[in-house]
Image (cartoon, rainbow, N blue to C red):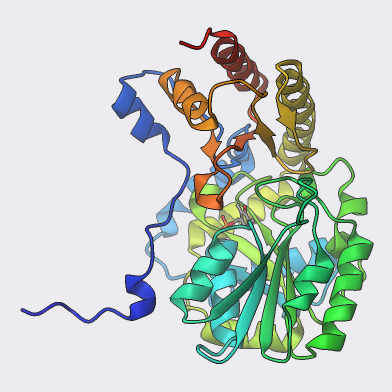
Length: 378
Ligand SMILES: *Cc1c(COP(=O)(O)O)cnc(C)c1O
């Protein structure tokens, strides 16, 4: 048979580069114990109430989910004090990102705008959908990973349909002031009235002061803004795939028409509802992450690393001048059974990102780093 004819957008696609898994490293290095601080997962695991909900609902796995996830959408509307008609629920916020592009951006005609570097899924899903991506560097020149909103707006025009920002940002942890994001949305509306600003707040609850850091939490929601949140990080349900968004009402309605009918499975939905109710677990998670972030930042700075201020559950850092290359440090950590994130796929080969772990994991990471950086270079 001749080659199946795959669309050119797909032929150009590189395989997605996720964080390494514990199973990968255990096998490759023959290690019994592996610590994963690579994918910004919850250092306390999954909420106990969510685990119980999964067990309780396992017997009903033979049933299809209720269409439209109304109970979960209702709980989320209450949480954020918005109309339930504005809530979109998806198989991870990844699904919502993909669907927003497919709903709003015409292939070959319209464009999306995002920073470089940014969360890789925005440009990847745009590419898969045949949509042009315009990107500008974050804060050209200043190396503080702050957002150059003037440059971003400079890329938007009448054919732009979506502008993506991540707040706090991945991989830097930088969090723009909500007033600056509100101002961006207002200026964007002037330049591109049919364009939506997507504010991905996957990590915003880890900020020391969530209320002061989130435009969604401020309660003042501009009409041209989509907010994304996820159950993958502070709620500890990354493996179940559950995310949500607060959308303009008309977009939310089309979202539900176009979404695969059952993309959120019943165990994810029940676990999500239980995780929302598990306020004790959530409080413990936020306290663990905020304290662990301070411990890791202090420890890395004592080792003379450059650490960027972070409002998220990870830290971006660079090794001190004269140390081993970042790649060598990443591999030396793997040999010790510790997985962090190399940022080659973000085009930042000299930077590393470490997720905040539990106290034992944070201590093991800092001990390993001390060992690697103190080692005489041959
Ligand atoms: C982790 C993350 C998400 C969450 O994705 P899910 O599909 O909900 O797991 C969204 N945006 C960014 C920037 C992330 O880093």
